Image 1: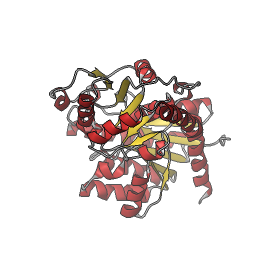
Image 2: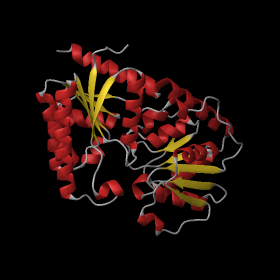
Image 3: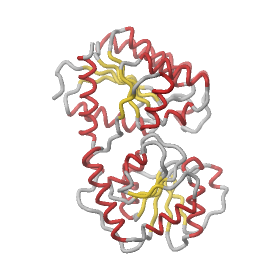
Image 4: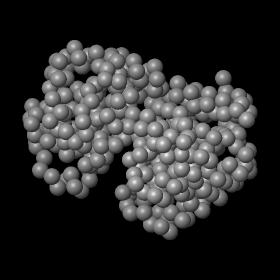
Length: 357
């Protein structure tokens, strides 16, 4: 049960533009309204030319104005709401990590419990940047509670800042989960991918696999990078570009296997959506991917290895294996990843922090 006097100030982006964190924010606010959790938000969405197209180059003047607006709104809402909890979502971006630290400092001055939620695979995002690591360390140490998406990020925080990270999964709306078992075809006809169609998502390896498996249709949904558009692709590979939410559902419904050979991930919403539709998975051991499917809901292949992707697709030609993986994924999502289950876990940590004076 939620304490009636619990007030949370969420520092996080809202759409537009649409994106993983923005979608999470919308679901968080919807759940809070239905469950009488009092929440206000400081919207950190991009502005200027990046708001028009997310891949546009960052303009420093836009970022300065954005930072000023966020800090000003944060002060106003702390004074008005008087929250006990400030929940700060950070994607750990090169410039954003500095802004997030400034937000954290301002929040801590008001005496709140500060939750910092790292919405990325930390190691891959900060890489070897001395500036990013400097502010990441300071941010982790000023937080009362650090939330991470996967084991890799938790380990990185411990090594960098000697701070413990609590793993909190992403969630999925119950309406996005099929209630009945998925119909499994005797043979694999369609392999799907959803995400940015670019090299870091393993798309070059998908193209190579498609060339070797001409009897299977590969459908890739998402904005296509210029480097990929210039490649020679086989006829059985289709670029669908960005598609609507209902079209994503239709694509997953008609697919036999979901393929996500990413080089890096935090906690993949695309993978979660595919599991919620009962799809067997082929993915790489990055981010939370391996934790999500546990070698029971799919197969793990090494990063950058198209040969192993082909072997994995061939292995999944086994009907019974796909049938078992499908049901296992549905059960895993229903038991661990629904909005209600994850939000109750998050509120538990909010309340626990308030008793740890």
